[in-house]
Length: 228
Image (cartoon, rainbow, N blue to C red):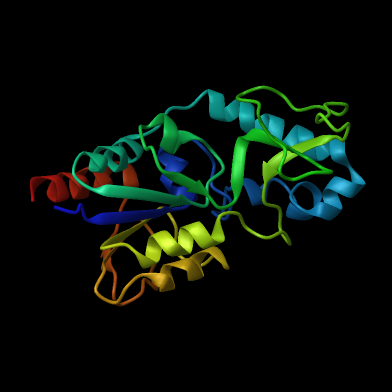
């Protein structure tokens, strides 16, 4: 019997219970940094050292936190379902929580890529990335993340997975960040839809909105699915 396919689409609120700061909340990352100075191609062209420092700090923070119960609940669904995680997050908490199929559409904090050949991608783990760190072709390495104004990664794979799903769970995001949020529109009309988020007052009508923290509500939802 073919397993039902669950696509879990996650945002910053997925990792917030683990202790990682979100971006758009009143006390989030963008309240302390100007996006133009650390997360755009123009920032990289103007001050590489500052951009590298910003991501080094975030990488150091990531090494100090652990996956939360929400991450583990998503991984547990693989016991009975085909599960694809499509995440806007650049952390590796889904993988560390046990998920085996994760598409990072905004890149990965623990990787670096060549500035001359984007196909050259290196796993740097929790290490620092500094001026003078070069790819094998001799160009400066940059954070392997999508900056504002750049195209997101894995678009075709993510949209194909969503178009194939039986169940879509949106967790830790209000579906307000485009173009990523538009991917959910590819879900089949018959797919069951869930939104797990403490906010999202304008949740789409075709979603069952579970209002609360992902580390509390996702384990409950996963338990229901696994009991069927």
